[in-house]
Structures are given as C-alpha cells and as structure tokens.
Length: 366
Image 1 (tube, rainbow, N blue to C red):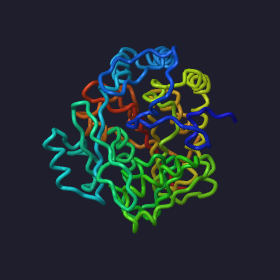
Image 2 (cartoon, helix red, strand yellow):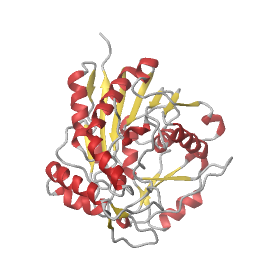
Image 3 (spheres, rainbow, N blue to C red):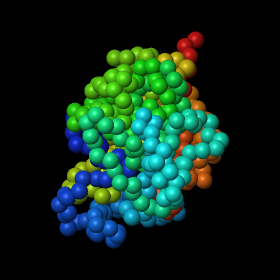
Image 4 (cartoon, rainbow, N blue to C red):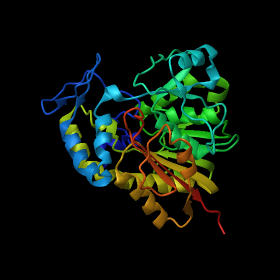
C-alpha cells in the first residue's frame, strides 16, 4: 500500500506539523505561492494550490460556513494559543500572571468530565505566550497548544488506574493532557516514526517527573498492527489519527509536495480505518475509544466513523453532546453532526480547531 506523506506519523517519512505548532520556517518560497498579508516578524505564505483544493471541497461540505473558517485559517495573526499548565511544576505566580494579562480558564462549569488538576488558559485576543525551551532535568511549567486539542482527552474521560493507549502520540500534547487529568495504570504512548518518537520522549521528559515518566512506555509499533500485538489490554484508547492537517497544509512551503499530498489525500481514510480497527482490537470489552483529527474533511471524519460502525458489530457510538454544549461559549461547532461526534470550526475570537472528535465504546462479549 502506497501511503501519503501525511501518514508518516506511523511510517518513517517526514510529517506535517500539528495544529498549535508552527510549520518549519526558512523554507524556499516557490513563485506559485501568494503572500499572506499578516503582521509580525514572520510572515507565512499561503499555498495557492492547497487553498484552491480546499475552496472547492469545503464550500461543498460546509456551505457558507467555509468563508469565515477560511478567513481564520489563512490569517495566522488571528490564531490563538492555549496555555496548558503542568501540574507537576505548579507556579502560582504564573497563574496570577495569566489572569492579570486577561487569560481565563478554557474549561469550567458543567462539563461531564473535568478533573480539578486540569488547568488550561485562553485569551480572546490573538497572541502567543512565549514558549519554554527544553532543559535537561528541569520540568516546563506549561505547554502551548490549540485549545481544541484538549477536547479528545475530555471525551476519553481517563480515570486513575485505567490502562491507556495513545496510538499516534507524537508530539505528545494529548499524552501530556491525559497525565494532567489522571494517573493511568499502564500508559503506552506509541509513535512509529523514529524522529517523532524521540520528540515524544523529549516532550514527556520536559513535563513529567522521573518517578512517573519511568512508568510510561513509549513504543514504535505500527499502529495498524498494535491490536494484534496487544489484544484487549486497554480500558481507554486515543486515536489522534494522521490526517490532512488543514492549517499546516495551507502553508506548505513545497508546492510540488503539496500537489502530491492532495493527489494521495484519498488514501488517508483507508489508513484511518485500519488504525481504528486495530485500536478496537486493543480495547477491552466495555472500554472506550476516542478518534480525533485536525481536518475539516468529511471523508476523514464522519465517513470513517460511519464505516467503522457499519463494519464492526462490537462497537457502539457514545453521546458527547453534553460535553459540546458545556464548552459552546468558547468553541464553535458544526451544527449538522450526530451525538457521538463534534467538529470544531475556527472563527475570529474563537480560532480553535479544526478538530473532529468521535467517541465509541466496545460492547462486552456475550
């Protein structure tokens, strides 16, 4: 099977950045790219061939909503960054500073699952808090991410002592978020690609203290086969799948690579389906699985989940509409979705996402 570049989170090839992380800077800018008129020292360039492709697809799938989503995705100066505090390196001074500067908790109130130890701050003003550098032996105080990236973890509802698998874990943001919420029994963070696996390990070392980080296993297994290697071992499984990362792809620095990605894009849904099948095998009966992507594409989101529900008799959808309702003041969701899924749409002032989340449960054997 020939896999597209975006599938390289599982196979040894370069990968696009995840949402909330800046793409590689300093790359050559082909003449086919048009300048994105943004303010600031680092101006990003829109890849016109990708924008044209998205324009056709997402106008058909999202209708009038695509216009406002496009305006945010093509305007990095509109982007917002959440600050996930590290409970293992708590700083009351940092939390006070954030509040003084106008940040507020992203998640509060009536959420079905919201551990008190999870603290994530956001601001309505588009700005980026300074990142902390990795220092050996010193834990970072916070992690910068797209606030929508926390939603799959809230949907997963990990409890202390549960065995957890993060199937496509690099760069590690969702693994870090899980550990802010609970202390799993066994925690397997899987990443096949060697470079990204090293990145994942460094992330864990930067945020998790030695006594705990030593209990976390980082593996480099093929995610499509992990269910065969480790059948019915986990209570909770997160599949943050390789996808056509809309934010990153819009700013592809290599136009020829972008064209190839778009041609091979249709292969991603097959890979995502295989990952989900594997994840279901790894899940214990009665356990829960959350599937997430950072794309708006229906083919990689609801179509994949619908195919799983039709082909796998041992899984059922789980309603996450209450979670979506509880965070609706901070996030904008596509209205035309089923109760077991949600799709975050970026808009100005709430520039989170894209993020698709769906939850399934494995039915106990009769």
